[in-house]
Length: 314
Image (cartoon, rainbow, N blue to C red; front, top):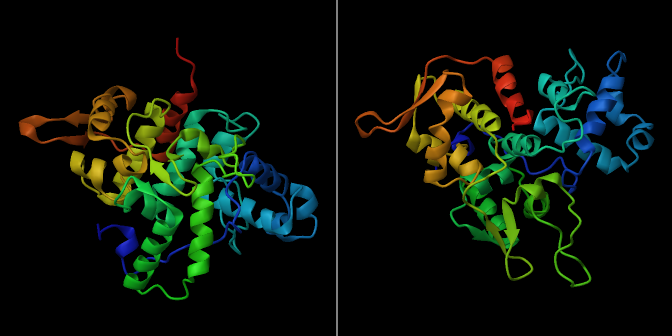
């Protein structure tokens, strides 16, 4: 599949920034709280760069950089700019404030949203390519590395070292799968990354074998699903209709990123009219499967629908 953001001339690949550390439990909240504390500081950049950052976060210098990377990539904090510094984003406030929806990321909706932010957008090259372009359901690390090396060569990406890709692939795998124990007892029970809980990637048989787990996702709520659909739609087309083929198979689509089969997608799309309060509607008129947008929801409205996933239902 040679279409999508990775194949545009303006695309800039990213294979680093995490310092080889996958996102860990509590890191996003730490980043949020630190930036919140520095809100009135004349130099907001100092929250991650000054000498006190190591003691503030309780980790080494490289981990501080990793915390900043993940919080920025997920969209909890903004990237640094001379005009604005570093700030908390509306999404960060919605999720992680002390009165937010899920300050400690204990709800599946938060994890699905984080996964979407990482794999549904092309910023993280390995994440996006694996979920949206890799052609098999099974892989090992070397297969991903070689595939990305071929992609880099074909696209003419400069200064992309093999060692850098290998480290990125290792970090990607550890984001979604439990770490293999060095004492040869198998895969550890301790989960490095909260996204392991989604069960999207599972070890198979041998030490370096993995499987992308396709099929129904019971913990994926209608709010996150709609949020992701609108996000994909806005990046894909400005038309008021979106074909089922695009939703299921285009790079960055819900079928690709959430590893949903076509039947799973249809079942969810049939419920759109209720979950969106009439703004979006599934249609199969004259055999043409598509979603019709009757009202464009702004970001605030999308957040309100997303928040419904956190409401306890009888």
